[in-house]
Amino acid sequence: MIIVMQGNATEQDIEDVVKRVEKFGYAAKVLSGELRTVIAALGDARDKERLQSLESLNHVESVMPILKPYKLCSREVRAEKTIIDVNGVKIGGKKLVVMAGPCSVESQEQLTETGNSVKKAGAEILRGGAFKPRTSPYSFQGMEEEGLKLLKEVSEATGMPFVTEVMNPREVELVHRYADIIQIGARNVQNFSLLKEVGKMEKPILLKRGLATTIDEWLMSAEYILSEGNDKVILCERGIRTFEKATRNTLDLSAIPVVKEKSHLPVIVDPSHGTGYWQYVETMSLAAVAAGADGLMIEVHWKPEEAFSDGPQSLKPEKFAALMDKVRKVAESVGREA
Ligand code: PEP
Ligand code: MN
Image 1: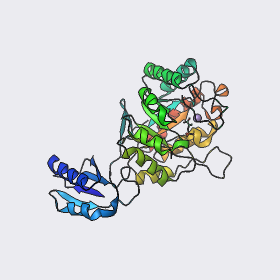
Image 2: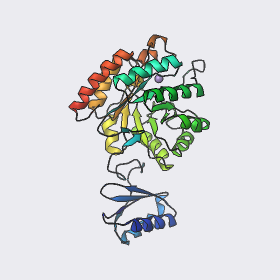
Image 3: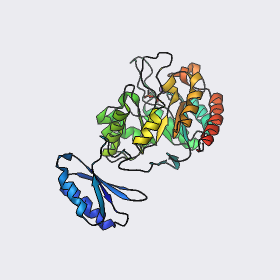
Image 4: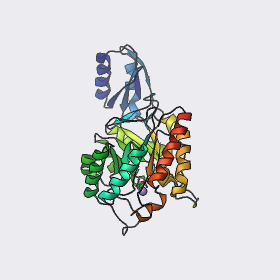
């Protein structure tokens, strides 16, 4: 249920409602918007009549059920878009945010060269995997903490915050110590223990859509993170599995307007994993921006033919720079900046 306060409600009125909600056995979450404050009462909705009685309190406008199964990430609870500030880079605002870098961190030279080139082309966030979810146990598994140290070093040298994946609840604390944004990969989108663990953390979480996850299931996964207290969630569409084999995944661009209607969270698109081939990355990046994405995540490698992972879908630095020029033009044409 949500308790909507009147515009002139005081801190004291809000506090009073929170206390009563908690007394009824619900968790109360205060969401202050520009126009009104809403209190979400989270828990078993069976005895909702008790919550309904709060309607008679001072400065309570209405008490309403939240119709969607996801609550905190829904537009019902928060009408305004969420903007997430990552060390000064704002995700979800007018300006598009491009995250770029190699699939895996491989060496200091590789990350430095690639990091410098994406920064020069206009990327604002560095990406790179130190813990890699590989289909085969015999494939390169990542540089682990050594990789995190390199990411931190290149991030500091270039001034770009960085995003990197965590795969295991046991490593959340370690990754959190280094990373500016923690990525939950497609394969872990319904790893609920991992979601709860990152939900307890301070830093923003980038939540990829799963290979076979519906939009509602994906939003329920975001709800796990928000319900633990971390409301800084960035959603990332990265393609779903369909019968089509010409591309690695089928990039679901219609997910962008759908998610934006249902949720206030920012949505970015990863056309690298979405298509699997560098040749299609530029086209789908432009389409994603036109469709309203808040940003892009793109794999770039200084020598894609030598990449330890995802070489075929990685752009060379000069191709990435050319893509950025086009992205800026499309962004402008749809009322955004890049
Ligand atoms: C990645 O970003 O390198 C990655 C493994 O992505 P996904 O989880 O979308 O496959
Ligand atoms: Mn990859």
